[in-house]
Image (tube, rainbow, N blue to C red; front, side, top):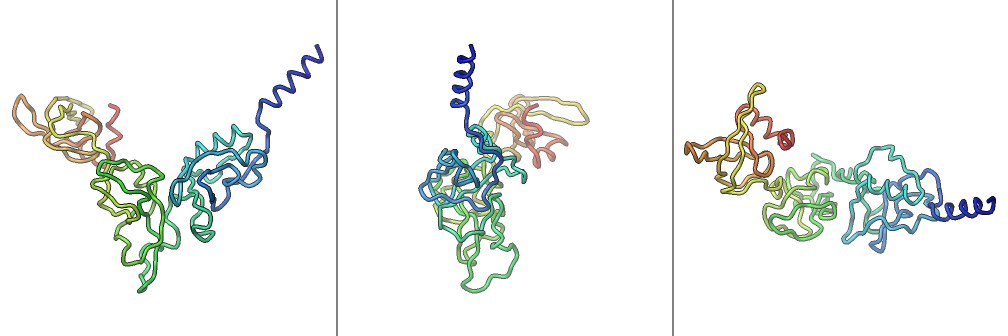
Length: 264
């Protein structure tokens, strides 16, 4: 009996990941072969150093912090994410000097000094496209990368945070390496022209619905005229979700926060 218990304990020990204790995220993670490992993200990863948690296809990769935390825990590492990061950027080793971009990555590098006067021939860090995109493509974390460009090429009003563009949709074909412009992207289309759409008129807690035909394409939060096929009148509405729109006083709120009405 005692021998069986010892054997069971030994099997459990080999089956469980070796515990390496708490670890800290490196301030500027880099990798040199496209395979992102725990050892390239954390100090003192020990036996878990070679566990692959992501891939880098271009000059940078953006990882979800929550997924990294889960992978680390499975490998026996404890990362508490004290800074509350949502994403981690990993760059190609040696691509940039150390300290240019911290791990909380989606933020624009300090070197980009928003509003600072540009000197002739000076360069700034801007968000660029890591690959060419077709109209309608939805931006994924790996599709954008910070890059240094001549200051006169930096678009006015460009995004200051990569997270602000992830999940948006390309309005037209976009070329790899070009800076992300303020008019390049939009929320994904949720209503297409001629779609039958349920329109909710909401005012003071009262909600009435009618079904009509969309007269144009619309993304969430965009105005979309809906033709009431019974009365032949047009309703001024705001798209909030696939096949759904809001009219009346609530439409102004839907412009700013369409998600509030998407699940009604």
